[in-house]
Length: 226
Picture 1 (cartoon, rainbow, N blue to C red):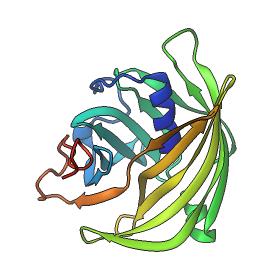
Picture 2: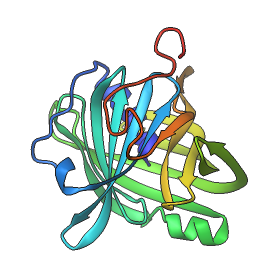
Picture 3: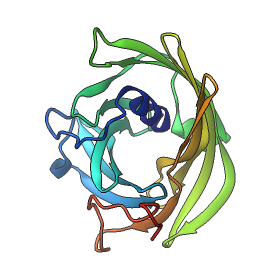
């Protein structure tokens, strides 16, 4: 789950830096760009479709305050593969235990899906540690129009644990009806009485040819909202 991974990145790597392009599964130039999402909270996401070892995967480039801060890869069923941190380190090494894998296709068919997974997380201090991600996602039936894109809202709730730290995250994601792809919206993370908003509501969608398409700029919620 990208939102869980983002929350973990905030906890583990709170200082913004530019992500490295080195040693990633697939380089940007070897992928087909689909669209850019301009989001609340001075964020944006570039969504690209790639080929990796004969399979279709997706590359998500996460932008904050006009800078590339993280890149993650997912399968064609939007199960998590790996993520590179703001400092260019590979922080999430992938799923090491899939008791109940997340399945986008299952959610689309039945309206909901549950998941119970364990990811290997590298805190850059000591050896990598396992993190559990348990939760559910379901379709709401709500469809909104953003810049001519038909986006279906889905909701999720999950619990993520690393050692003695537990985080609960509730939020939403969006399905682009044209490409049948899934990207993050907003949410709220709570842990030990602490609560933090995870912004990300889509405000503007950009296609190829649109000003700002696949550019590392952010437009909404950066100081005074544009």
